[in-house]
Length: 404
Image (cartoon, rainbow, N blue to C red; front, top):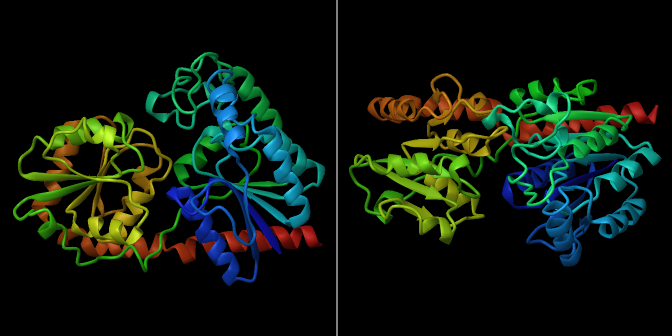
């Protein structure tokens, strides 16, 4: 059996690491994994295909997306080349991940899938497939996507359109395309996201939740040396982790938390321009692709603070729990699902005082009060071998039904 995964990134970022984890489990299970991707630090390899090129990506981003609000409808010629490569590979199953990111033409891809009647598994990491524009609508409470997007209040947000708002057209075209696929299984990464899908135009498809998994051989309690490195002796460490930082990821909250002298705020994944905006008493770490280094920061922290305003199922929550560190998060999307009983606190979105109170509660009780619960929850629910073997079961089930 051959399974083709398609995603924006490969071997980096949360979704890119999910793709490589599934690839690994496939190899161990006797399934041939092939991967097509838009962007990666790895440019070639056996059974790998880099879809994007410099010109098509720039045209897609700066003309199709930013001017004509047509994310997903550019990259025409690079997608044609991809389809020729798929012809050669002859996959039995197409496993889709993120299709936004200025690298693929969804019209060509879906028409190809329908022409060859290929079965599809689609892991939904966000809400883009069911909207006319945005990847997340939860934080503004928008419900237009339930019947048909128009006058998008997030048209200037990723994927940013600076000129036109064609959300109504995009919604109609996505609905027409995605509901035309005959054999498709939708895999949301959280129960919250599944609940949104069940109210969308994808509601009639089979929906099966599979949580993201993490490597418990890497994310585990470690002796870190972080306190000595930064000379933090008598303060509780509040950790924030992100691939990019903005107010939607809780940047303002961390600035306010840094004013509380008994805490030391450490932020991981901070770019130079964001760093220049932050108070000097916040310790900032540039983006790291080293999971081992990240595990040391989780292990050193007393609390992972995740005041996100939009998220489907944040991997950082899982990684923190696996390192024995409790989580405080806003009641946003699928973020609360990871915080099991005795593993942290969930507070209402935007309620900063409740956020502070939750942090104080955990720090007063002490990290050891939560340590065992966090570790056990990670082992039972988020072990990547267990999570991603569910995809193997899904592949085998679909493959058998198509082989009859």
